[in-house]
Image 1: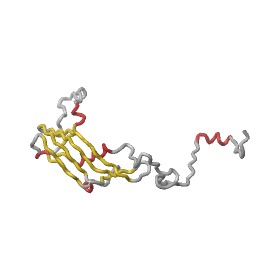
Image 2: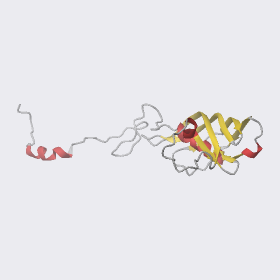
Image 3: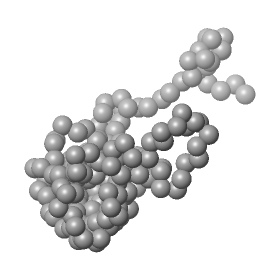
Image 4: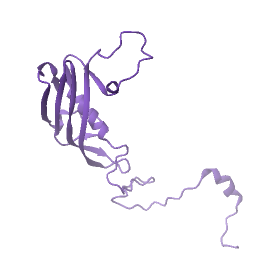
Amino acid sequence: MRLDLSHIRQPETAFLRQYEPSAFAEDDEDYRVVAPVSLGFTIHKDQDRFRLVGTLATTLELRCSRCLEPFAWPVNAAYDLRYLPEGAGVPDDEDTEDRELGEDDASATFYQDDGIDLGDLMREQFYLALPMKPLCREDCKGLCPQCGTNLNTDTCQCQIRWEDPRLAGLKALIPDRKHDDA
């Protein structure tokens, strides 16, 4: 999945490809690609600088952070990326501390050997599309902390009674009462 930039001659070139889920490694624990990935963008060329403006669409499988069940997460991400040749933008003078960052410097990525790795581009967009806390649904009840039962599908008989261990010394001072004298 490499875009060969040496073949790009026009100032604007359209690019549209579809990749099967099997093209992506499944050793990633954060997500799994489960639908074909549609990658489309326009390449804007300015000498040896390139700007890719486009969209990426697919469906990822994530694990719910509460109940650990897998669920589908649709991705439809728009991006605008700038690519400079490796070594460009590095000042020759030693006065790099006083140099101000330009607007393009923060969003620029570097390419090498006249090619851009589209796999890296897509993985980056997948990670940017992931929610901070993936939930299968808004009202997910999660797992029982005692027995591990998925509370969305089953109910458990666990009696969850938490006592603050810092107050255990005070509890020992109060005798057990069989009936209320107050």
